[in-house]
Amino acid sequence: ISVLDLAGHYENLGGFIASKITPFFEEYGLTLTKLLIENISLPEDVEKALDKRTSREMSGDLEKYLQYSTGEALSNQNGGGAADMVGMGAGLAMANKMANSFDKKPSNSDEELFYVAIDQKAQGPYDVKMVKNLIKDGILRADMPVWQEGMEQWQPASIALSGLFKSTPPPLP
Image (cartoon, rainbow, N blue to C red; front, top):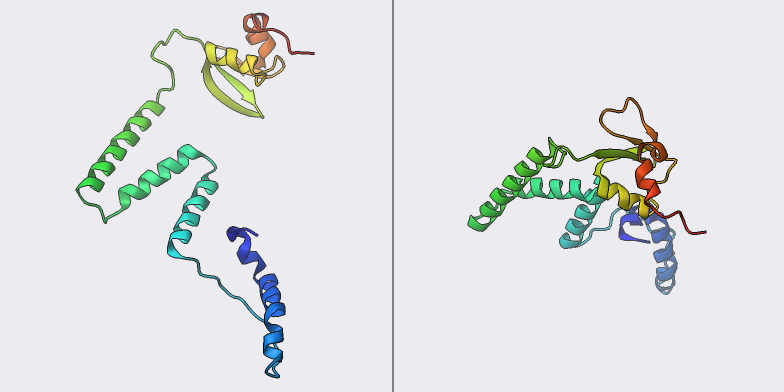
């Protein structure tokens, strides 16, 4: 049982411990009928580590976790000169990231960009080089939907990217 699952097993843990210590009570003529565990306190550093792990797992996305951690660091009032500089750097980095997220197109605006549907989710935009890698790695198949600016609707990759599929060897038998 992991530490994270322990709370759901307090009753089982109480029964196990009771079965192990009952003989010691019986030596004194006492009967231990039940041992109830309500809480297990962990050392502070273990609790902090679990809190961080839980926060990251809840977000499910490392980038979101890093954003969360940066926000936590910025809100820490116990800083000093170095902590303030780190906070300023993190703030500038976050502002830069936010500014870049408004325009996902690469600097070469003439470059073709494609969105692909992977696991029923739109992914991208990807440039031609990345699309070729997706095809080569077998992630993007000919029957999967693809869209790019100017298309009215999603099309099978075999149609939208026909030239790229011709330059890729077929799957191994």
